[in-house]
Length: 354
Image (cartoon, rainbow, N blue to C red; front, side, top):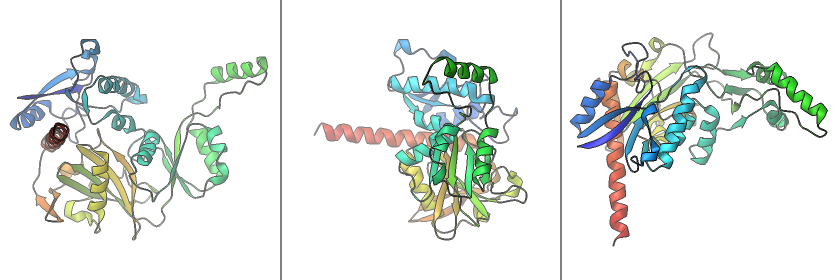
């Protein structure tokens, strides 16, 4: 039986699951193991803190892992270190480290949109400080969507209508350390020509505003299964469709997905080369726009809330009325991804030796 290493955090948590028990405990690891076992794979659960790369035992091993949304993303930073080191040591981490880097990091997410050539019909600029912004302030067109790099469910997102409002917002998202600021000011007095650190160094994003939208669509793709739900712009939430409450959304056939939405989502999924993905998409009546994406550790409410999923058959999208557990959907997508990857590797080997 093939083996997969599954990395969990110090709380024994693995993955994200809506309606988990206990609260915020992630997927049911016993169920997950059973589903993988049914497909001929054995899960070997391991803590991140048990990884020892000096032994050289992880080369070519398949590794799946959880991320974290801990306060301040301190543990998530530790997970990044471990996963990147595993990838460099030759392990097959699924998904690749770059997807973990983009998880709850919208600045890298936007950069990833560019180097993966995901879409080119919506512009976004990323900044690391107020001084970075001031260099390009005359190029900003209002209104513009402002996003902090971290945050979920619409937190940190707002519409900015003027330069004054933008400057104020950048200051608001920064927590000043006055002792360090004073020390840096002293350096400028002591050393001629010294350039002081910017007082506002919290990274952020400015993204094109698409007017007259009434909703967005959240799409999950897990291998051959596509889940969709429609999120209306609720009164009092401004431009934010996310975070409006799952009972206010429309799932599956009730999502009223426009023609072309699933094809657009699938193109992004294929380009990303991952087992599963969560995508936020809007439609202005003419074009689809990719707003955000996550390739791991995203909310899974659309699975238990939906009566089924869509799948691509005979050049069309068919709805399959069947409720599945999150663990089953996740396991299927991982196994399908690994098997496709192994087929490609075998084909390359055959080609290279003929």
